[in-house]
Image (cartoon, rainbow, N blue to C red; front, side, top):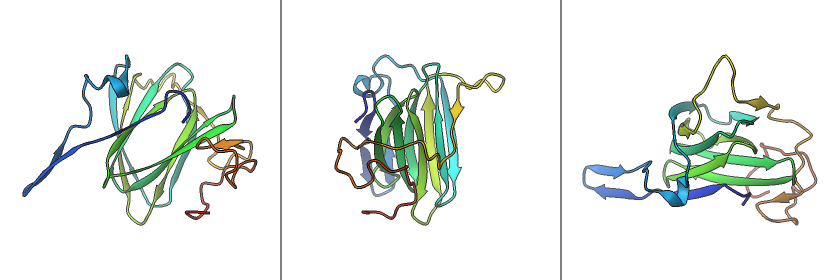
Length: 167
């Protein structure tokens, strides 16, 4: 994975009533390190919608947690032309740490809306947002490494969010 991206599985405590889970703890140093979360946001996304690409140039780190549905989270480093993709689901919860310097986004997979809770280390300032944006289908995003592999058939081609699974 690109440096700084981390994935932490979330443990569920299940009983006959349902389940309980902790989604953020200050003592999860393996995930948060020295980061301090200052804002939480909730996103509802319809199936097959792509929310990409953007990055944060002033050091913001995002932590993504799919509560419902299935998403493909992608990151792209335009310094190394490396891409990582992570599948995250409300059925098998995990928190994904995304350093802001990488171009990142996600696609809602499957046939149900995605409910995404995400935490940020910087407060959003609408007057001076910490965001740079590119189109979701930017042809300049051409990975040379995908998930650590140089032999992925998608290497050397513009990123295609809509490729069918396992292709």
